[in-house]
Length: 572
Image 1 (cartoon, rainbow, N blue to C red):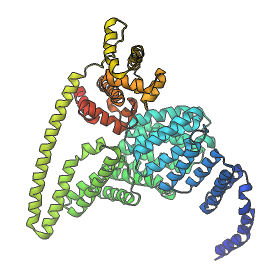
Image 2 (cartoon, one colour; image 1 turned 120 degrees about the vertical axis):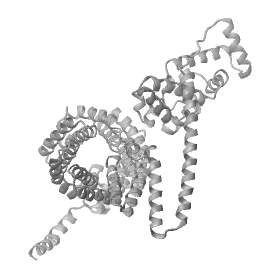
Image 3 (cartoon, one colour; image 1 turned 90 degrees about the vertical axis):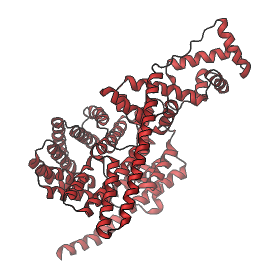
Image 4 (cartoon, helix red, strand yellow; image 1 turned 90 degrees about the horizontal axis):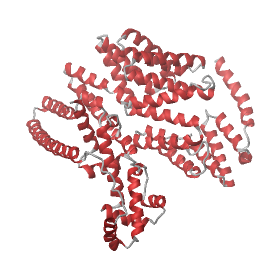
């Protein structure tokens, strides 16, 4: 009762003073941009007030027609919302700041947009926006450049499972931040982010000693800066590392110390991680019931957040096996269906199943087992002949599909062997000479395209040099940009390529890129580890889809299949 009375006194005395301390609404636009921004920050726990200051900021910018301040105003508004609405505001920030070479914008907007897309599981678009942000920040904002580089590393590590690629990025960031005053607020959080990323990556690669080193480093740093959430995260991560080292009791002790902090800070992703590693630790101790209890909590959190990374999906396999042994078909089907749903989402997002999922539970077997479970449950309840008929149809469909798959794989392999034998060397560009025979060849073509023979020869020489220097690997190359480089008319370049290369300009560029890609993939095993998106960028394409389409058109097979066959050849 006394405590409540004190709160009432505080509310009626202090709150009016606080209200009086705020600037009158009518005069908000008379404040400077810096003052409005400071009021916005001071009211971070009251979004309604923040909205007032953000709108006032934008209104002032619109009134003064100040583009960079308009961009900043839209960015402030984006901080107050999530999802598609935030993305729309961020697009406005990008629109007003795109060509202004500002230190913050549009790099900040592209980075935050990438996070919003990541939360929507649109990983391809997220990566694209992170890469744009990184490219912009590289020019004039090194601090933010490494901040974005770290974000790309997290996405590659946690969402796409590209641990080695992420580790390289984490190391670059670590080398940058360790030269700074990492106890200063400006760098402390980013530095601890990177240290945690290194520890987590080494843990995933099962290099436990390195993981322990960085967990200890991060634990000590977070104690110095009094970052209690990160302090608990390093304890949790070391607990997970101890699970991988099979030191189960100590691991459980560490995880249980960290878990209450994760709950306190409402860190749902690491609450899920805590239960997952507790499940693995109890399984290691042979305590299956406790393992199942924790893996079921993982599923419960996933049902609420709809977010899970490949690292934590094996708990479902444990639950499926557990309930199968218990002959509990209801729960077996429940977790099998959930696992297949997650598998489907991951497949759509990443364009292919992760290696972990492929090894542990092949998709066709999952489908067949699910259908068998559904059939068994139906038979148990109804004893109907319909079930037998459906099973018969399923066998026919599966057999037909299997035969179709066999024929498809056979055709693909024949095409693969053809590519390997017919594309042994990158075709060298033709050397343009000045003898009479060459002039006759050119002249015979000139009569069809109506261009001076000397100009044709110049263009052919420049195309020859263009091929030698691999200029076709530059992204976004067009006939116009190449013509500008050649200092000639785009129509001339297009006609010369059509006549002498016997291709459209796009086919000409794409064929050069794919021929180079084929040879590079055969010669360099490192490239075979790249994602399709990374290969697309490596060979001058803007996205994975255009690369795959061009690759298939040129070679008759998809790049994923080509790489898999190369890997098999390397092993043998």
